[in-house]
Image 1 (cartoon, rainbow, N blue to C red):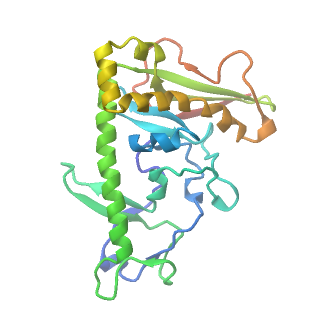
Image 2: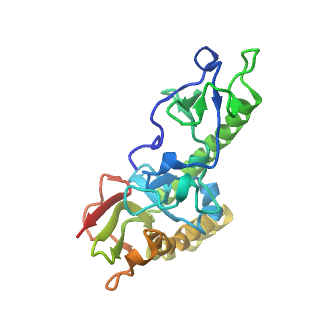
Amino acid sequence: MTSQLLIYESAVPVSNARHGGWSVEVGADYGFSRKVNSVPLMAVEFPHAAAEYAIVFSGTADAFIPTAILGMRDENLYLGGQGAWQAKYIPAFVRRYPFVFSSSQDGKTFTLCIDESFPGFNQQGRGQRLFGDDKKPSAYVANVLKFLEQYQIEFRRTQAFCQKVKELNLLEPMRAQANLKSGERLSLTGFMAVSRDKLKALPGDKLAELAKTDELELLYLHLQSMRNFAAMVERLGGKQAAAEPAAPPIAPEPKGEPPAEAKPTARSKK
């Protein structure tokens, strides 16, 4: 994952002058995320996402964010035919597309933008209009704004949660591996996870504080979600994937200096 835009190709501010005659048709085709192997996840999403996705942390040692892993290569394994999403829960990062907020340099002002490369963006009146005949934003745009405003609130809450994880020094670099019957070996590196040993070693008062704020539950949901790596590997093609015989599918990185920036990176070997 190289940026928070990921699936956005041409995001521009929404305005009546530019988009007065445009509409947005949003359906069940999530093909725009086909080449993405991870997306940011908000802390509030953990209870829903942990049942189906492996949740990890990506970024730098000083600034990181929860991330849902979608694939072992640069591909989204949760997409089926015609771009259908094959999971009960769809991350909010994906659901907000083609809209996104851009922020001012001081982070105090936000501007609604739309990715004009989105296939459902059209001038034929399909779907929901962005502006009414009175040139004012439509009710549809008003709902989009509410969704993105709530997303931004949850983003700040997630940042606070990550700051707590950082202060407690709970993360360690991790990697995931899988062997395919073709002989290909897949490796996903460049992400972090909570160390169970470090978590268990926390003083009682710190654990009590985490429990009081429900952050301890988030940490255990994250750890439990790691089991989903095995199910995700099965999505590579069912019989193509083989269990790793000599090592667990996810394990700590070899000792050494952690990467300057952690981001899910796929590697393939024959």
